[in-house]
Image (cartoon, rainbow, N blue to C red; front, side, top):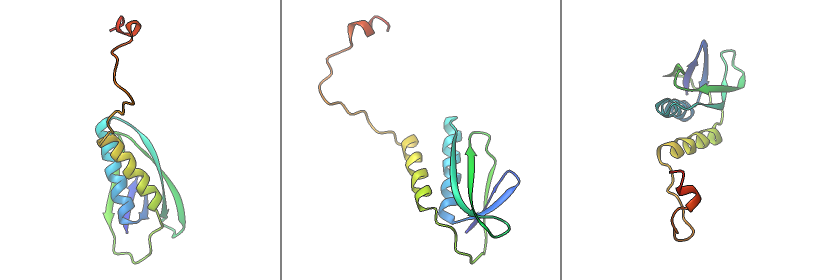
Length: 112
Protein backbone atom coordinates (compact mmCIF):
# COMPACT_ATOMS: atom_id res chain seq x y z
CA UNK A 1 0.00 0.00 0.00
CA UNK A 2 1.22 3.49 -0.81
CA UNK A 3 0.19 7.06 -0.10
CA UNK A 4 -0.52 8.98 -3.30
CA UNK A 5 -0.46 12.72 -2.80
CA UNK A 6 -2.10 14.77 -5.52
CA UNK A 7 -2.57 18.46 -4.85
CA UNK A 8 -3.41 18.73 -1.17
CA UNK A 9 -5.09 15.32 -0.99
CA UNK A 10 -3.40 12.11 0.13
CA UNK A 11 -4.99 8.73 -0.58
CA UNK A 12 -4.07 5.09 -0.05
CA UNK A 13 -3.85 2.79 -3.08
CA UNK A 14 -2.12 -0.51 -3.78
CA UNK A 15 1.55 -0.52 -4.76
CA UNK A 16 0.85 -1.58 -8.35
CA UNK A 17 -1.73 1.18 -8.85
CA UNK A 18 0.53 3.86 -7.35
CA UNK A 19 3.58 2.77 -9.34
CA UNK A 20 1.65 2.52 -12.61
CA UNK A 21 -0.03 5.90 -12.04
CA UNK A 22 3.38 7.51 -11.51
CA UNK A 23 4.83 5.84 -14.62
CA UNK A 24 1.82 6.86 -16.74
CA UNK A 25 2.14 10.46 -15.52
CA UNK A 26 5.82 10.42 -16.56
CA UNK A 27 5.07 9.02 -20.01
CA UNK A 28 2.32 11.58 -20.61
CA UNK A 29 4.62 14.38 -19.48
CA UNK A 30 7.37 13.20 -21.81
CA UNK A 31 4.99 13.36 -24.77
CA UNK A 32 3.18 16.56 -23.78
CA UNK A 33 -0.12 14.69 -23.62
CA UNK A 34 -2.84 14.61 -20.96
CA UNK A 35 -5.34 12.04 -19.73
CA UNK A 36 -7.57 11.23 -16.79
CA UNK A 37 -7.42 8.08 -14.67
CA UNK A 38 -9.85 6.92 -12.00
CA UNK A 39 -8.64 4.65 -9.20
CA UNK A 40 -10.34 3.13 -6.18
CA UNK A 41 -8.63 4.51 -3.09
CA UNK A 42 -8.95 4.80 0.65
CA UNK A 43 -9.46 8.37 1.81
CA UNK A 44 -7.92 9.80 5.01
CA UNK A 45 -11.20 9.14 6.84
CA UNK A 46 -11.04 5.42 5.91
CA UNK A 47 -13.76 5.39 3.25
CA UNK A 48 -13.27 3.69 -0.10
CA UNK A 49 -13.61 6.32 -2.83
CA UNK A 50 -13.21 6.72 -6.58
CA UNK A 51 -10.45 9.25 -7.17
CA UNK A 52 -9.96 10.82 -10.60
CA UNK A 53 -6.54 12.17 -11.53
CA UNK A 54 -5.85 14.65 -14.33
CA UNK A 55 -2.37 13.80 -15.61
CA UNK A 56 -0.36 16.19 -17.77
CA UNK A 57 3.07 17.81 -17.96
CA UNK A 58 2.28 19.99 -14.93
CA UNK A 59 1.04 17.20 -12.68
CA UNK A 60 2.62 17.16 -9.23
CA UNK A 61 2.29 13.63 -7.93
CA UNK A 62 4.02 11.98 -4.98
CA UNK A 63 3.93 8.32 -4.01
CA UNK A 64 5.38 7.07 -0.76
CA UNK A 65 5.42 3.75 1.03
CA UNK A 66 3.38 3.03 4.13
CA UNK A 67 3.41 0.24 6.69
CA UNK A 68 -0.37 -0.05 6.63
CA UNK A 69 -1.79 -3.57 6.87
CA UNK A 70 -5.12 -2.53 5.29
CA UNK A 71 -6.09 -4.40 2.15
CA UNK A 72 -5.91 -1.98 -0.79
CA UNK A 73 -8.91 -1.50 -3.06
CA UNK A 74 -8.89 -3.54 -6.27
CA UNK A 75 -7.54 -1.55 -9.22
CA UNK A 76 -6.66 -4.48 -11.46
CA UNK A 77 -8.66 -3.18 -14.43
CA UNK A 78 -7.41 0.41 -14.04
CA UNK A 79 -3.78 -0.76 -13.80
CA UNK A 80 -4.20 -2.93 -16.89
CA UNK A 81 -5.76 0.00 -18.75
CA UNK A 82 -2.90 2.35 -17.78
CA UNK A 83 -0.33 -0.26 -18.81
CA UNK A 84 -2.06 -0.63 -22.18
CA UNK A 85 -2.00 3.16 -22.61
CA UNK A 86 1.69 3.29 -21.65
CA UNK A 87 2.46 0.56 -24.18
CA UNK A 88 0.48 2.35 -26.90
CA UNK A 89 2.59 5.47 -26.36
CA UNK A 90 5.99 3.86 -25.85
CA UNK A 91 5.60 0.93 -28.27
CA UNK A 92 3.27 1.99 -31.08
CA UNK A 93 2.19 -0.84 -33.34
CA UNK A 94 3.40 -1.06 -36.91
CA UNK A 95 1.07 -0.19 -39.75
CA UNK A 96 -0.75 -3.16 -41.20
CA UNK A 97 -1.10 -3.23 -44.95
CA UNK A 98 -3.70 -5.54 -46.52
CA UNK A 99 -2.26 -5.46 -50.02
CA UNK A 100 0.62 -4.09 -51.99
CA UNK A 101 1.09 -0.35 -52.18
CA UNK A 102 0.28 1.02 -55.62
CA UNK A 103 1.86 4.41 -54.99
CA UNK A 104 0.32 7.72 -54.14
CA UNK A 105 -3.00 8.81 -55.50
CA UNK A 106 -2.12 11.40 -58.18
CA UNK A 107 -4.50 13.92 -56.61
CA UNK A 108 -2.78 13.57 -53.22
CA UNK A 109 0.71 13.57 -54.73
CA UNK A 110 0.04 17.05 -56.13
CA UNK A 111 -0.23 18.43 -52.59
CA UNK A 112 3.15 17.08 -51.46
